[in-house]
Image (cartoon, rainbow, N blue to C red; front, side):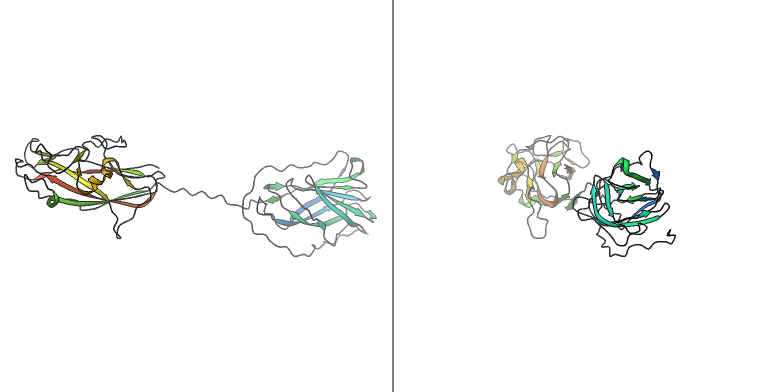
Amino acid sequence: MKRTRAFPKATRAVVAVAAMGGLTGGAIALTGAAAGAASLTNVHLSVSNNAASEATVHNTATYTWDFTTKTAATLQNVTFTVPSTTTGATLHVLSPMYGLGSCTATTVGLSAGTVTVKLAGCGTVPATTPVYLAVDGFTNGTTTGTFKTVVTTYSGAVTASNKVDTGQAATGVTFQSNKTTVTVIVPDSLTFTNLGPAAITLLPVPGVPAVASAATVVNLRVSTNAHTGYDLSGCLVNPLKKTGTTATNKITSASNSAVAPLPSASGTSAFAARVTKATTATTAPGSAGFSLNGTWASTATQTTTYLGYASSCATTHSATPTATNKIISKDTGPTKGDQIALTNGVGISATQAAGTYSGTITYTVTPKY
């Protein structure tokens, strides 16, 4: 007697596995129908979980097939294609099956993308019989995309000569990626802070070498995420010039060599500085790669010796300060905040013309991203 009613789905509990991790894309190969076999109709595959798996995440599912027979036959095997990366070590057919009469499923296996269900005790299955069969225990493969299953029935062993009907689903199951690729782009960042004062006024005593009474501290701080750090340099391109006079009335920066005390032995007026790392509890400690550079790092320069700023703001740097190299401090990696204290001082010769002299120290931070 032909069954025409709709068949209920097998009742079972499905545990949803959280989708995470990575997948690989790609086309899914399909197995076509063999020549000479009649075509099954209404072929359809549904899955309880369409999330693909990946190396560390295994998404399990029940696969359910519906189809309508074309040819009356006593069936012994039915095969169903699945994506080639699908696995299933403990597959079993869920009860009940519909449309196969007295058939029972004796074994079910998976090999090379083909599921084979072996049947026993079957009578003749009439033509145009709706069939419903569910297999549990699959682990979805890593392949994503839409897959159209092919179902084939056999009257004996799975050979071409025993093939009864075959057919491919008109619509496919889409196995979805279970990962989101995240790209974080961290922008280059550098913050230079002139903690001040922004302007300094020095009141030296002409002809007196000691500069302690004519020294003012300027604090500078650098923070950056540059992978290999930065260079901090300073230059005094033009001499300190007397307001309203010619260039002959000037105070030059001492050369980039140790000068102590100021003025120099020749009695020439000179402007220079000492540098130290800021280490007080209220200042940023700096990173492990933070250091003073070249002669600036010497103990004498940090205590009693004054060193002149570079006379050129050229961008080419080398390891030792020279007239064209003005690196004062540096770091070899990212830092939350490196801070230095520059103690600027001036020594005035006894014959330096009275008046107000002014100029500008320029600082340059060169990051190394």
